[in-house]
Length: 226
Image (cartoon, rainbow, N blue to C red; front, top):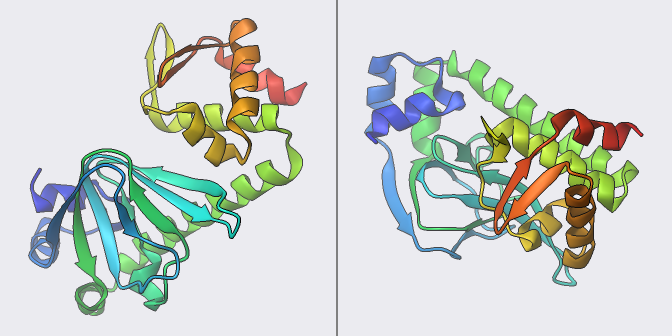
């Protein structure tokens, strides 16, 4: 994938013309990471945006007790670390690769220079930040008001909306271990395994290794509404 096409896929730069994208592409730098590599830690200096060309990155928080909380996943065509472009402050979360990953980086100085020349990009920034804030609000509400079973259901519905592939059911096209799902719903692996087992026994999902297929979307939605 060319740098130009990668920028075109990222919603943050959707409003730019081909000429503007080509200019911005010249400032990108390519980096390759093996699986399980920390790209940055929370509180690390933040002055770079990351655009994912290939692979998968998990955004996480780590408590003083060592418990991990997953905030998001990012794959090809998506970006992360955008707050660093705006305030240049320390990272608010960590990022780790889950597989072989290729990213391009955009430095804050290059971004601000481009923003001054093309101020209409600010609309895309506001839209992206609004989506992130809404996601965080929904996530906080889920953790505060739902039990583990409902949190698992809610997350499966969210993942189906983002990564669902329609076939014999809706396959969540995101390899996901029960441990990773546990960090996302802030629960033990055992409780997540129990919730998945209950959903499987009710004919709502199928679990095959790291792949989860939703067999009855309406029935899954009704689990939270009960």
